[in-house]
Length: 137
Image (tube, rainbow, N blue to C red):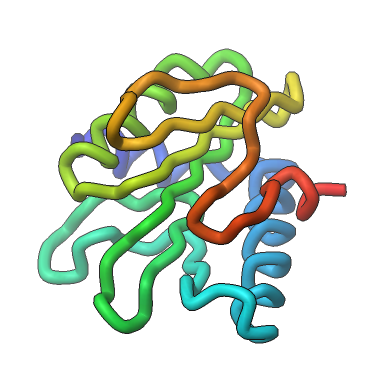
């Protein structure tokens, strides 16, 4: 898991960061409008009590302080590694829903904790009842 911290620290191309900004902006609009109770955090530790992995975006239930959704932004060469990382984080921190977005291919991958199998071409986030791809237009 410590490798993820190093990778995340140097993976900051402008296109990568622009996608994070668009997602956080759109998700914050949903939160401010009262359409979700999940607060969007960019590149924040999952477990604040100790050094922990940092997903690109996570949606946190403010009442329980639990992470409900994690989102990783990647490129085609890093896809396999980031899918694996997402699944590991979901299992370790009991996160119900996770996404990886390959910005080179413009493909979303969705996974839920029960099936643990990434589904390509699916950007629908059931936790907020919204298609994440809508924020990238």
